[in-house]
Image (cartoon, rainbow, N blue to C red):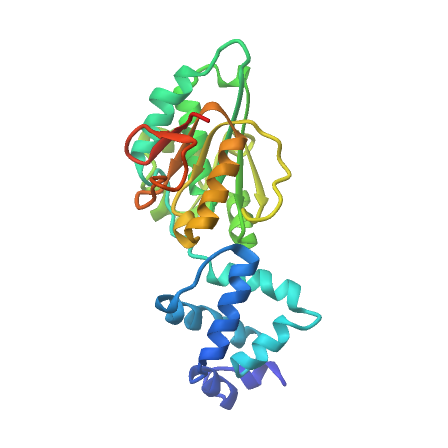
Length: 285
């Protein structure tokens, strides 16, 4: 099939507009997504799956979800499953989203660190397009005048390889950077052109971006002083959440801090943390 055959207005493009996500297609794709990522896709996500994966069908010039499933099960399936997860994953984020978390990091967590070791490790688990780890890095610079004397690193991971690449590039639209406090924007953000800004090298040097499936092996050793895992576990069932929070506890130092999303809670999910208020938890076991 030629590239022109899939242009808007062509017969193939028309078929793609009407492609149907049958029950068996949705069930099979939801099972693949859960197996690969742990993300649970209920019937309420059916329209999302249809809309986002229809774009993959168009890119691959396929005209049915049955053909797409066959491709996923074929020799090219491994690479396309990564693309499928990238397409399904919701990447709603922003600089200094839930600002009380960064206030707590700068005002309570960082000042309490032992000054004799001068080692600091923070993990942004589910970093999306990178706004969260850059917000963490800016908070470190603001709260720690002696940061250069520390062995400080921020690990930023996400299952979506496209988002990891976006974060590593450190380029954002001007409108997104408007959420950065003015003094931090002046200190750490430079204008590239009329619509684009770049994160400063001093921020990039703090952050290591890596692709990581939270339900797979974790190659890093830790321990971490703080972990941000916000608006991620809402996509997992309770048993998966319990396993994940237990693994986070093992990765945190005793007394380490876990930040979760505004709609998430560890109540009746994990006994290894104590609630400090406003979706902030401390490891106690």
